[in-house]
Image 1 (cartoon, rainbow, N blue to C red):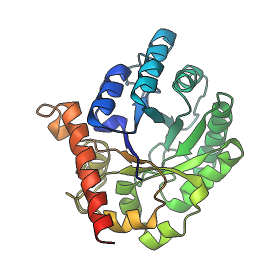
Image 2 (image 1 turned 90 degrees about the vertical axis):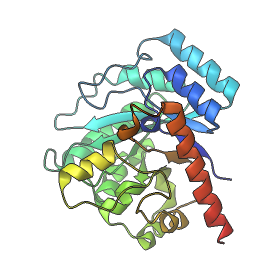
Image 3 (image 1 turned 60 degrees about the horizontal axis):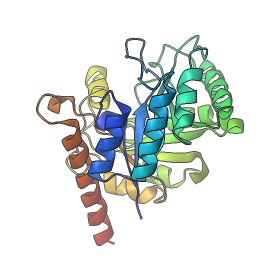
Image 4 (image 1 turned 60 degrees about the vertical axis):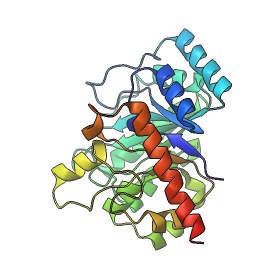
Length: 274
């Protein structure tokens, strides 16, 4: 039976307690939280250094039956510094055993060898907190091909590193369903589900689709049925659908509800088709 997780970007709210409430009310099995800032301008998570809040989050997770499957997100840049990561890792560990997400800086801003080295250090540090780290390849960023991403994961493999694949970036990277089917299942811990418009020719639109403007499953141009058929069915589907165009008109809970409803409908159609 498929399990569904509510990604942070689907219902981006500041309070982790509100995220838990939304995921529980809508009917998700899991959720993701943003604890580590992706960019320097991001506001710090209220969970950092707040053990009382972490304990209340854990209590509500236990009461609702939810688990936190992923924690965003470590951006691997040139000169990547782990010195500020301990607090976020400690907060993540208070919530159970979520997987941390790492992504790379823009293509050309950092070399592949440094990404592998820094990711290995991140995975080693996380393992000291009982946590694993997954690398998410993004088509317009460094290490943005499947082979490059697998090399990054291999560098962190001694410390339990793995891979996250996102439907949008599977398409943007040009990965075929046949290539997905041949992927070593043991490295794939999570799958991000969304739909999107056709692949654009320009970088600016590609970035916008990725970060701000995706579609509900079944309402875009991605070959989701072929991708899902090629991927293992026992991994949670993390519904990650940033829709900034709806920010002023549709509440986060309703966006989360639409994401889950359309995802379940798509899976039901696939199952009915045999």
